[in-house]
Amino acid sequence: MANYTAADVKALRERSGAGMMDCKNALDEANGDGDKAMEVLRLKGLKGVTKREGRTTSNGLIVARVVGGTGYLIELACETDFVAKAEKFVALSESIADAISAAGAKDLEAALAANLGGKSVADAINDEAAIMGEKVELRRVATVEGAKVDAYLHRTSKDLPPQVGVLVAYSGNDDETAHDVAVHIAAFSPAHLTRDDVDADVVATERRIAEETARNEGKPEAALSKIVEGRVTGFFKENVLLEQDFAKDNKLSVAKVLENAGLEVAAFVRFRVGA
Image 1 (cartoon, one colour):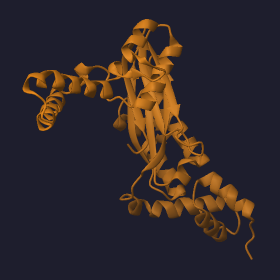
Image 2: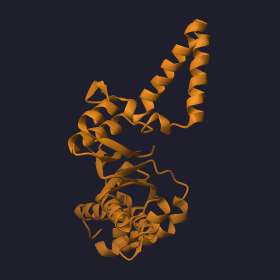
Image 3: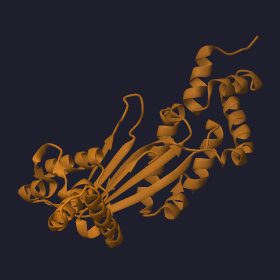
Image 4: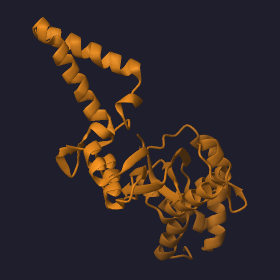
């Protein structure tokens, strides 16, 4: 007869982030000792590192840190939503974000090498992944810099940690409006700040497609130029932050809202888990 209870299994699951059967088997092997069961999970997990390499990490969470005029956005990925919302995984993501921002790491390579409790972030992830029994990876790290930085994290489900994260670097004193712009970015996912940031080849392709479509629709030759420019403008309105209609007042562009608030956005970044 097992010398542990359902409460012990639950406690080990919350502590380790591992699955129920893995926890039960570990407790069986450890004769009900929770600490020894953690060791069992770690050892078995380390043996499975190679097997996990090819797995897909389509779940996870987004974490943000703002230190002075620098913002850090981090995506920590895992295989299942069960692990994504586990306390152990959430705590790991927070400690990683702290380590990355403390080190001033501005790319993935530097982030993985940052110190976390005497080991690298990469090693810390591998150790925790061994216990959780899933592939866990630091998928992306991005930074923005400006006079000020606003961070916004959005939960797409109340049962999950934040799945969307935004950083906005800006100058000006209307912090409330700056935050509203961050929320707007989360909802409307612009790809660029200004139309000048869009690659010229992309614009040329959009213009060519617009012209071919208009001709196929039988539009008169004399009107083609105006129609094409209108459709290219529509492309910019969809993909460029400053040209989008503002979420809270679609009669105003984001550019106009910023102007009215005395704000200037220097840069932004948006992550969505798995995207």
